[in-house]
Image 1 (cartoon, rainbow, N blue to C red):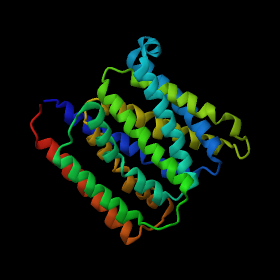
Image 2 (image 1 turned 30 degrees about the vertical axis):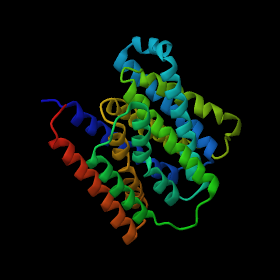
Image 3 (image 1 turned 180 degrees about the horizontal axis):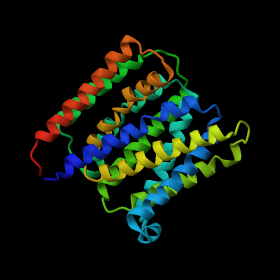
Image 4 (image 1 turned 90 degrees about the horizontal axis):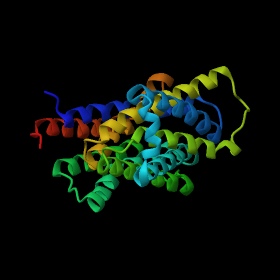
Length: 285
């Protein structure tokens, strides 16, 4: 009854929901980038460590000694992705970050083909193209971005594609342990630039939620889902984050979406839902 492919889709959808809260927390926390990365990362690392112990017991601690080159590369790419992601949100417009992030399915598919020789299905590529079209429609192609932030967003895409392919190539990789390592080294790299100015109980609580929901929960679901899904599928499910992130901000902060946002977001949702339907009908291999 349990189909690993359908389970993977459900887990990846849950990860996307958790990651889509980033806009809410970023908007609600009035602190600088380095400080937010530091606190978010440390809370996220604590949550991942607890998750690792809950799922693996003390064997989870031994996982750190069995990362291997793939595990350390995963931790490096995951940490860089975290830094690039938060940095890009601060250095360029949300519109540019969103449209660049929508290229993850293509980057993952291309890297998966180069490294794993996995040829994406026609349905997956068609849905990816449709999702990208929706993202372009939603955010527009204005020239209000800044090249420094756009480059960081491209770095985020490359890092995301890399961890997708690594997880696919090494399904037995102790990814939770590797993710915990990334959630420790990346925020600690921001420690010299962080500040105690503006630290209140409310802001700490928000950063704890940022780390535990957006980082821990999202990453844990992603780890287990990406093991059993092709790179293009994993990237495509992540494309849902593009319309969902402004949706939560709209609901929480009463920011009315423009017609382009509604049309483009609907197109992304349509593309992903259509693809999930196609996947559910395809016989398991």
